[in-house]
Length: 183
Image 1: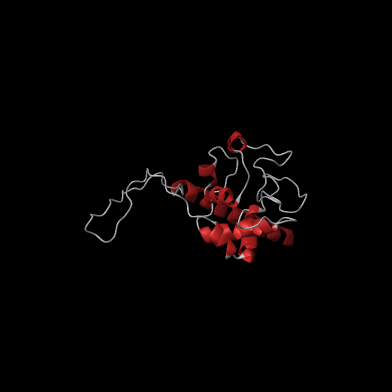
Image 2: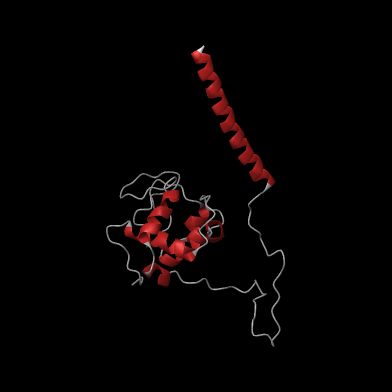
């Protein structure tokens, strides 16, 4: 009878695991986490008499804040921790393998779409240029916004300090790290 008891315990554990996974799946369907495409309530510009003004014209292009000042103060150890979530799809070692995504060794100032053997999206191929600090920052902020048909299914990193930490760590993954001033 001991083997029957062990079987009941194993079935109970498997049933509990299946219930947890099903609950998570149903919760994702009931409460979607998609970001808003526009504000639910538009913010109106304050009157000229007010000392506080709010921007209401979201059609005006806004210059993104430069990542360069943040890189100089970035916490590289925090970047190493953040890179662990990237490691599921990317390798970082010199001559490391291509996984679901390309190897990111020596990514700073490397030509976009240049890892041999990796099938890049047409949008990334057409973007051209190099992965400088600003383009890495824009891509890591929201990959689908930077390159609409990117294959990378990553939501992005909201905090500029976190992006700077990750980019500073990526910069170190090179035999000859790129200078911070892009000279």
